[in-house]
Length: 263
Image (cartoon, rainbow, N blue to C red; front, side):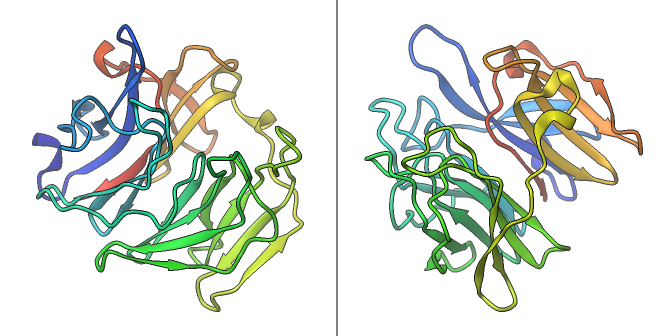
């Protein structure tokens, strides 16, 4: 494909489009240098669209899609697909879960669990070695964290699992985080406050998806309110001003998750 040629920089965003019936998810590729958009071919196991709410991560030039819901049954799946753009597969997740979070570091995808089939918030966390196709369990988190957010922080020294809520506290998001230290292999709770969305530009305050491109640029998709229509913006410069970008109708539907990949 034109957007996966050597030395190209692309953003990968699964987006849903709205036919009659259930939503279908596909992987959209955007090249910020040429402003070109395209779609990746569907995987063989899901010819009508990727699992709903799957997460994407990039490691060493490979794209990894993890988990989600079966688009036909809405049941959580443990499937993992590794796109090295040569039809390579991935090793299934150890357990199925919904609304988990991911981060990447040093050839591994770190995943912290959302909830299981019984909607119980999980304390589990795992690391997936993309090159070896192996999963390793990490120390338990201090709390179950459903709908948490993951980020690699502290100059790449740790994976933060931020906020989320417990089984008995549906919708009451915590103000803490669990932090996995890459150097020591330990997991510890951080009582520091979590930044609120109140500081975001009002046009992307809800349904937000952000992908950092490097060089001070960030692609942001978001809406003014929950359930609103997403717009796509480029954020750059010290003032972090958002500039709306034109997106072809075929690619302008809801963006759930995304990542930056260099090939």
